[in-house]
Length: 329
Image (cartoon, rainbow, N blue to C red; front, side):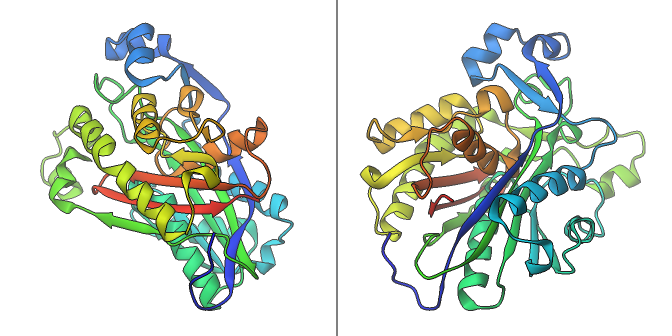
């Protein structure tokens, strides 16, 4: 990538992942959703997903992923200046989850929550890059952690089989060169109704007989939006980084739906050597955790080389989006 921005560089130093132990196959969801294993595979590409235990929290998962990322980076907790937690599923409105994660890791650092839903990890990575390059922070721990099984109605025939739980983390630190390309990000609040909760907490308070608010999604409209808009945003990120598709080792979009991933990869006309992340098949849609989990899987399977360039593209509720090119550790 070209170096065109002032200040010192920043790059990803380490990656960590946490996948809950409980594996949920499509057959387990057939009775509540009315969707067969064959139907789910054809429409989403998902074979299985992970669900956290009832008492397991967003912060529990975040801590496990963060510990692995710190170990992978060779960075001790006391060297972390900021813990940045991206999540849309922390069930406690306040305090945020990041201070708890920082405390449990023993960092003594600043801590901040960020909610940009499924685009959240790329948003957080862009924030971390800017902080490190400006000298405001030396090392930033970026975490995406979501327990989507708490947000989705298990009987929802359009969404219950899509979402899952997990956490992924990265350590971002200083480097002499450019390791994280400029983030191309944005939002269209006019489309916020396409992925949204069924009611507000105020409505639930004032009408106690109302069903618990759950996240609803207009799947067909979101599919069309993602396939139609995100490839162009990904191409902008490539140009901003001074890279081409031929320079990439991997394309890692948010793991929303295998059909979306395949359609976007086709529109980008990626060369055969570029690995396309398809972690959704065995992990499901984990919102802010999906991109770091997918990268971890690519590294685990040897599909990407150390130091290779990866194009990331997150998108989801808001509607929000963010994309950037990064150099893998």
